[in-house]
Image 1 (cartoon, rainbow, N blue to C red):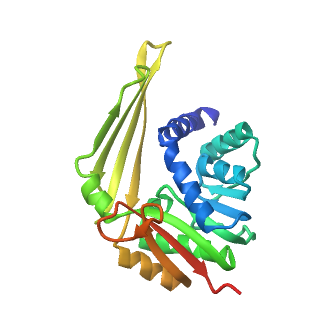
Image 2: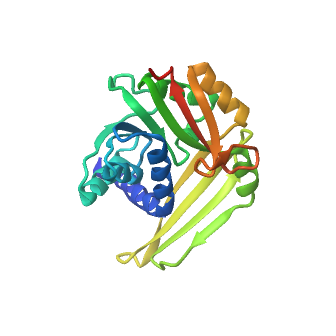
Length: 253
């Protein structure tokens, strides 16, 4: 069994190392500007980079992710930072057995774009809604149709700065409108074989027009919905590559 899991553990570590640390700092600042210090749930929090920053800022953070290897990394990052995270392995579309309710839930780094279709997306929104306290806030981001259709058109990125760990990222339009497939390949040098080993995954992301996001949030029951861009610096429009949403469950007392 361990031999089957090892490639996914390896990929999780490589994927975690890809992300620009400055982005996590910006996500953390966005949360701190909009959510008082207290209990918070990070949906699809992966390797815990954001969760650790929030814990260091005084938040009591629970992290939910479907990937066991990512949660293992999250535990390691938390231990390195000397902070406590409570970890939960579950699908963001179904964690009804988790009875905790939160004053705030966050979900960044395109997490909701990985849900395969509009029905799944709305189910994910409902789970977030149900796990909020009355008056609680849900903050999340998504990539936009502009990012999919313009920014990722003919997109290819190669990183060979480390000759023993070469990375190639190619983006292709998906079969559905406003979707993209990311073909991620790592070529890792194996001294024993004197050859490179391929570690590969394809990630599918789906996005929608801004009006569709707003309509789905309203159907689920969210109120006081704000659609923003540039980490909250401006109102969202069709020219943005990433949208940020702040919405509320019910009305604050």
